[in-house]
Length: 347
Image 1 (spheres, rainbow, N blue to C red):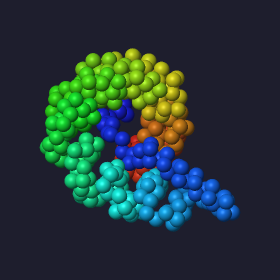
Image 2 (image 1 turned 30 degrees about the horizontal axis):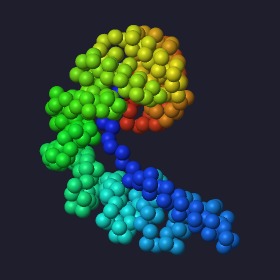
Image 3 (image 1 turned 135 degrees about the vertical axis):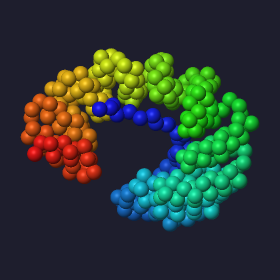
Image 4 (image 1 turned 90 degrees about the vertical axis):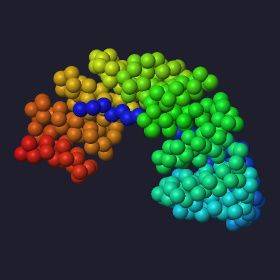
């Protein structure tokens, strides 16, 4: 059994609406609400959903690009991507000269509908419109990374370095690209450059920890500690540190760290799951089963927790309970072949 932890990359903020724009829109909503109250129909407005409210405002001010962007963001949240695309396009048609974030939103909407070429074309248009804009260059590079176009991504990042050689976001993104290319050493150097330039760049400390953990370099623990120093409320960093300790071969210390994680963040299912796995490795089967039971309470649709508890029940000789858990696994995931084989062995 292996612990649940994978190297993940934290990308740039994808939110296409900024604070100034949001405050402007809130003011507009307030204005129209007051106007509606004076006209005697504010109750209808208030009773509508947020999307309906914005649609009502658009019907009164159809050339307000900010309203289309607000509705597009709400549509994105509700996974109505085609409608969001239409709103982003409308906003750009109204004002394409001053809002690069409109293009970011449209590109993201195309990505969510698996239209990667359209997403790329949109950002290329943004780059034509805003050739010196660092945020646009970063978004273009990020998309090229997501599409595994590594050399073009580095070419765009180099354009940022030509203008701003100390741009931490560009160094951070270059670390991602280099890692994906298999150049781990240069990736580490890029992340290190980030924290040298900005010691408060928490996400770079985390990436350094993750990459060094993969390389089995124990200095990773110091980097996780730096991230924890900057924000002690994030369970995932404690999880990453405990996982690293286990990877470095110290199971007892890893168990202690996962126990601390479970005590500090009792609703954090992944940490409790890993604690159960480590108890299984240490032949503390009863404790393992208890922790998988907690996982099931926290996340009843996670098939792997039922499967692991079934394995614990088998070791404890509780075959009927194991059978019930394995059947639950297959009801949640019919393709879980290990569970199917284990169930056959109980019949």
